[in-house]
Structure formats: C-alpha cells, structure tokens
Length: 522
Image: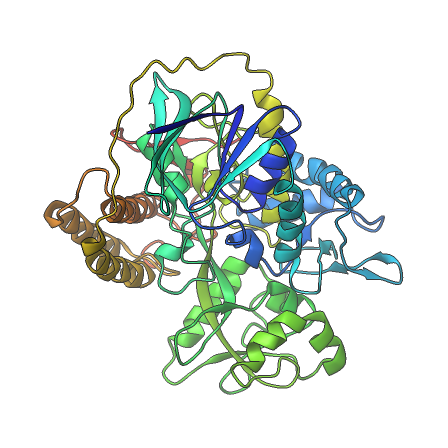
C-alpha cells in the first residue's frame, strides 16, 4: 500500500475536476486522479458551448426563467439563481485568464439552442467548445507545481468513518499498486452514467463510478430516473454513435421524416428548438412508424456558413459520406446526460462530511427534470469553486489511524464475461429504461438484474467484479426511481402515467440499506 496525503483530492478529469484542481491549488497541494487520461471526459466532447449572460440584450432573469421552465417544475430555485448569476462572473474570469471564445466583428459570438429565449451560448472553434475549454485548463493544470496528476488510477473505495470522508483507496492500472489517499477535502467530479446504455454520446468510461462510490459510502443519491436523451445523434450502419450538436438546430436546421415532413410543426411553438425531452420523445415516436426515419437537414441554409460554423462535425460526417450543408443526416436519440446523481447542496457538499461533488456526478437541482442545453459546463465552473471555498471554512484535520491494508486485483479471465454482461445490461437499459417506460418492463428488468446479482461469481476487491456491481447498482437505482415516479415529467416518460402529477413535485432520494424517501426541493 502506497500512502499519499494531500490538502485536496480531486477525482475526475473533466471540466469540473480540472477547474476544481486549478482553483484549489491556490490554497494547498492537490491530487488529480483519473481512471483514464486527462483528455477523456464528457466535457472534452461537448460541442454546443456554455450558456451564460454576457450581452446587454440578455438578462440573468431570462436565463433563470429558461432554466426553470426546461426543468419541468422541480428545479432547485436557489441553485438556479446561483448558476446564472455566478456563471457570468466565472466566464468573465475565464476570459481574463486567456480563454478565447469565438467572435464576430470583435464581439463574442452567441449561439441559440433549444428552450433558450436569447442567443447566449458561447462557443470556441465553432463546435469544439468542450475540447477547447478542457485543453485550456489542461495546459494550466499540468504545469502547476501544487498539482500532482495520477492517470490510469481506479478509485474503488471511499474511506468514510462516522459519516466523515477522509479520502479513498485506488489501484494503479499500470504499476499494479494499491494506493491510499487521505485529505479533509475529497471532490467527486467523475461525470455521469450514460454509457450504461448501448446507444450513447458519452465515452465508454462514463459508467457512474462516482455515484456508486458515494452510494456505498452512505451518501444520498437523487433524481436517478432523469436521464436526458440527446435528440440528434448520428445513425450509422456500424452502430457508431456521434453527437450532432443542438447548436445545429439553433442555426436553423430542420428535423424531417422519410416523407420530408417537418413533423414538429404544430406540436410545439419552438418547433425544432423545443426542450430536449420533447424533441427526443417526438423523434422516438416517428421511429416507431414502420420504415420511417428521421433526418436533420440544413440544405435551406447558407452552405459556406454552415460548413465553417460546424467544421468538426462536418469532418466527422464526411467520413460517412455525408455533407452537413447538403445531405439528409440520419439521427435518433441517444443517452446523453445524467441529470440525477449524488445529492448536493448549493456549495457542492454531499450528505457525507468532507465529500464534495461537482459536474454531472452531482445532483444540485439546477436541471430539475430536464437540463437546459449548455448549462452543464457552466455548472462545472460555478459549483467547483463554491465547493473549494466552502471547504476552506472547514478547519477539521483528518486523523488517519486506521490500518487499511487491502489487496486489490484485476482478474483478466473475467474480462470477456464482464463485457458480455455489460453489453446485455446496456441493451436492456435502452429497451426498458429508455425514452419510454412502463411498470411491467421496469419490474421485469429489475428481476433479471436481481437474478444476475445472485448468480454471478463476484470476487472481493477485484476490478471486473466491482465494475459489474457498479453497473448493476446504477441500473437498479434508475429503475427504482422510475417506478416510484408514477407520472411523466421532463426526461421521465411513463406510458402508463402519461401526465404530470403535482403530487410528485419532489426529489426521489436513495441511500444504501435505507428505504426510498422524498424531499421537497424548494
């Protein structure tokens, strides 16, 4: 066992993790840990941009209202106010640090996306905002003397005593060493869980590890029924999924079916720019019609402008023989964003002392039942800083007297069986816990997971065993919450409960070995 002690522990290399590490480094030593490498994260692949109020034509109040409206009645209003007001300050600081966003005639270029009432989405290099922002932070993090980076390091257990987190145990996948990290500040910035679906826009690593760690440590987990499906991901013959940014529709793209009909006309006043949950649901219904497909088309727009604005997307489409400006682009929804996660307060604090969360792993309440497009990168910046600031008021010192000697291992002979079980879960998640749900299917899948859990030969402190346990636990959390919410709201659509029900204006909270409970969010 190799022991490490730092002032701050940050787990995750997306924008939430990088921004936490860089800010925390002002106040002490930081360990930045990732199970992959620094350039693999949802943040890195984010195309759309960052929604923020920076123009005189826009207002904080407008951004607040748009976020609340998209959230379908269960946003945490205080958290939303913090997001939209602090967000402007964080972006101002980011620009002062040297981050360059796209400009038109010397002014910041502002895009429009679904459910926004104003152009307020900053973007960089057209459709590569996430990559550019992550690379910007990456360049500052790797050279910082107070930050030590641990790549290919898999965290398998949080160290929690009497509901106080004092660090975690990890395993280096290259050196095969078990590592112990201790601190009085542990930040989970591990991203979401959309990759437990077989059709997803996320990297394969987005399997909810941080949520599972927090759940095992006794933390509250909230709103797991709300998984946002991005309406427009590319359909390919090889089943490769590639995100077509909502910004494409923001620039005027139409959604049409095989008969070249704009099927959203007359169904929502904002047509293609309706909230994501609505658009994804309508596309799903179109795809249920025999021999029908759904396409994005930009053929009615200026081709030179479109190819320049979405240069990176167009390069990807070219590999499949498509031109973004002239061709019909086949799309269908894909699991995209985990709205629920580890329940946190307005300072990123979880229900376990000294354990903080930021980014997609967190359930701050800002997204309600349906995330407003391009609010996620802003959330990373806002709540990571608040978490560090909050921790500075915590003067407690971690006394680590516990002798923690655990032998972790990777049994390579379990890999194929793990992948087989994982693929089955991913396909079943899409079939039974996807855009449309019903009680019968949810219970059937839950029973199958329970059976797998009973019959599988899990090994203690073994990599593939723990990964399978994690995916099963995440799936069961989503199922339990989806069953409990007997209504259709935001990203949760139940065919057996079609309407919103005001009796469900609450969060659903799960905790290990405890009964399901609810909390009024405001």
